[in-house]
Image (cartoon, rainbow, N blue to C red; front, side):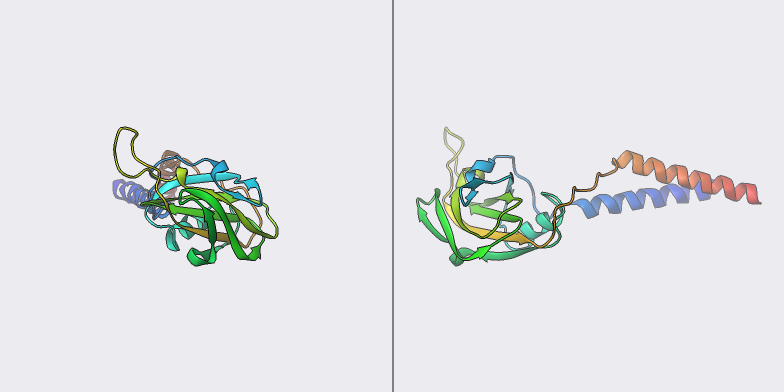
Length: 196
């Protein structure tokens, strides 16, 4: 009986550990410094923003976050444009951007500056190819009295989703998952004992 209960608890703990490891992101959220108004498409501010994240956005870091339903379940995301595909004007910390092609659908613009990036999500857009950017939503660089300086733009990236929006699933809090596995193991042991 003790061996069966111990085995059930061990399996429960291993399953819970695997669930937590699966939910881990490949990039680290460094802070919530972005504002949805820092990036626009066709004069419309982003619906949401997330960041800053340490490192570079392309392609696996940003796609890992977006395919992991950062802004909701939109199906698969893909990188559509980056670096030289964007024509920027204005300063190196804010200005306008444009693309040679038009895009439609849920979209995310990544702003990479300094050693970090932030993601700006637009849920419903059609036929867009221009907007504005501001790098103040990424990590400050350097030190000094003001806590660092706003870094210059490294590059912009455009990610577009291929699906329709669905609310992300509600996660079950981890302690309840372990408790459920323990109860199921205990019930199994009790039923096995009764069948003897």
